Picture 1 (cartoon, rainbow, N blue to C red):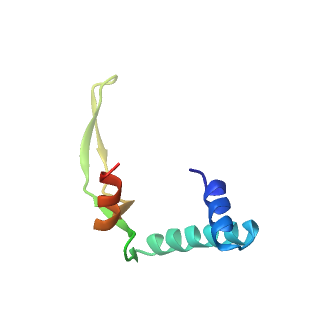
Picture 2 (cartoon, one colour; picture 1 turned 45 degrees about the horizontal axis):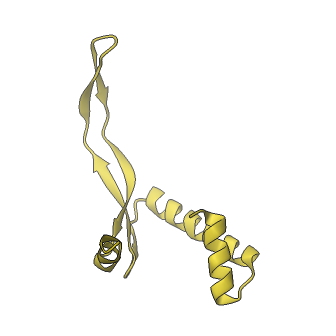
Length: 92
């Protein structure tokens, strides 16, 4: 499902214009990105959490050149679904 399809579905069920729904969705995504970039997790009760996962430094191998490459420690965004969300998807 794409952002446009989500916006269309929300517009149908709420009666709000699709343009307004798209604006809200885009602002939601911007707030989540900005919060994670600032080091804050985002918790949505009943849905899930957008969290920051820390990856430790590790050594990888470049097979074609047979050399070791150090990948520095870094953070990545992740989504952790709520238990209700997991249950609903597991029943598919």
